[in-house]
Amino acid sequence: MLRITVIAALGWTAAAQAAEGTVELGAAIAGRWCSHCHVADGSGSDTAPPLSILARGRDDAWLRTFLSKPHGAMPDFSLTTQEIEDLIAYLRSLR
Image (cartoon, rainbow, N blue to C red):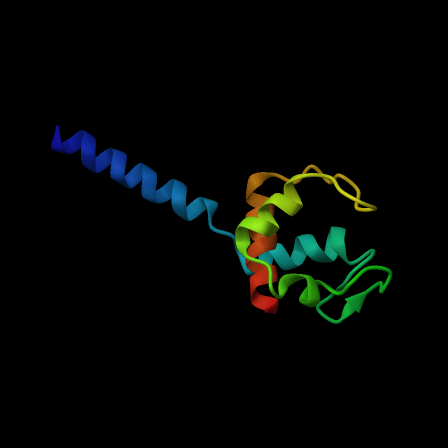
């Protein structure tokens, strides 16, 4: 029984770590998809608010919901859960 508990705990830890976003991957996604309309890392278009402005005052749950559903003029990129977590990590770094 202890062995199953340890294996289950290790599996949960690995899954939790995989779900955490990576700033570098999020920056790459922002450069590929977001910078067409938003300024990201000092480059991109200014047809929409800079990502640094959008990141301020918004918590991760709000960002997760916002990035998960198409809205307004933003196209539906159909981002994976991991891509959303990576973008959130990147946006968090801009705060």
